[in-house]
Image (cartoon, rainbow, N blue to C red; front, side):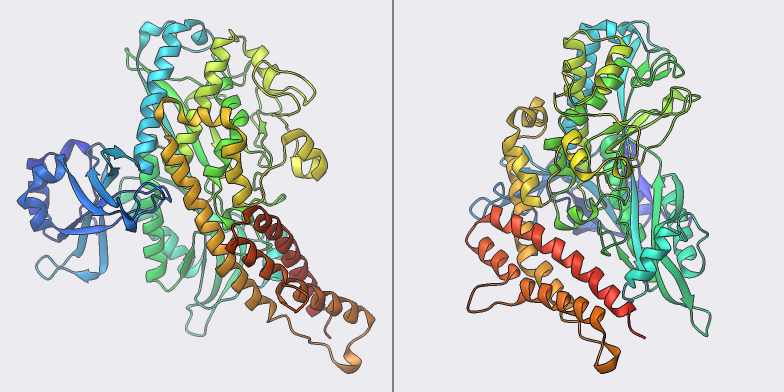
Length: 633
């Protein structure tokens, strides 16, 4: 469908240009304003193109009213003040969303909807995810210019001689997307999945059949949208698919990943929403289910959505310089700005973590041993000249000594459901705090900064906290015990409730997010309220109900002579755990019953503590039942 229009760049957002474009593409029948609320949900309000063209100037320069009750803006758009407006973002790229199941009779092309990224406005304030990231970009750029002009020494170990050479600051971000696909009704065989993962039978292997077709179609479609896809491959999770007698895929359950080119932060976050829609539409149209959950299958690798951030300066001579890169990558890992930025993320991660992971599903992914980062630690490399990749750390340093432009940080904790607008905003806010600490303390020597980030937990740093270690080149899950990790890197939150407490427990670090009015108090409070609301509702209904249904499938399989003492011990343990989790009696409620009661009474700490116990017992019983079944002959 190369003749279709796929996107409209910002230089064509004038009323005259749009009128011509839409008249030339009559199959585009609708316009939709895409605001993104604090839950990361995109709005989709279809407006006929004819109505849009009738008053195009007003549409582009004013706002359209919507119902605030339909967007996630807790404690902002309330029942007695629910008016929310949508204002078009004329600086973003606009995409055309095609319905390939509905063709326009006149043009014989699929009906399209022009999706216009927008801002959500309440009480004349921009209160959405996109607006937060737009403020974060502007604040960081101006702050970096101010820092460089005030402390020009910060440029000494870069390829810039003086602040006067700089024309502007540029920010770049990129995200990746991992996801699971399967044929409908297929159930996970945990043992097969676990063995396949352990043997790395799927990772980077050749795709085939309908999976290959859909993956290739996704890459071609993303090229048409101008996203410049860079790579797609199988991930570590999955098992070999099978085919039926007709040669069609009969059973499939595979984990895949797609990545595409970086962009400005706001455009990068917009692009990820588009990628998700393209992936979903293409795979679903070929009879495959797609899951963007962080941990769709217990006991097997979850899906990440690693987030990359970088900073550069455009010089007046047209050259671009990476501000994180030192003059000589064979003698240093980072520039002073780079060290400050990395330390800022690490020191302030307690208030960034709730933004990154704010769902039950997200916490299910954060399990040691699955390349999911649990510890707040970074890795720089084993030596300057040989870059290494430590996949067990929270923040990775991506560097190529032959190409300093590619140097950046990779935050490995986000998952596909993380709100990337807020995640990227938080990254730049925390990075700025570390950069300010470096220059205000006069720490321009990169060797001294390397020593700071490499300090032991017993050492006192000028910025990083005593009692914490921030750099490690080992696989932290294999090299240290849980107790050692907690001592060196801090104890991470285990539930949504514990994560949201960080906003209260670290008031000084919370100020890092609100600096420059990027994250306002109302936005943070709304995000917290929304996260807790989803946590308690999903925990007390979906999660508990789903687990109870699963527990009821754990039935006795051994009878008579087929059952020996080992079987009896395993079955008795299974019965006891089932009883503890789900059986309410006159003596008292079950664990699940206590969780529901605690939530009803507002005792959220008790519910959170019980959730941790219940999760541990579910993991134990699932493994017990697998072993029990394997002992049948």
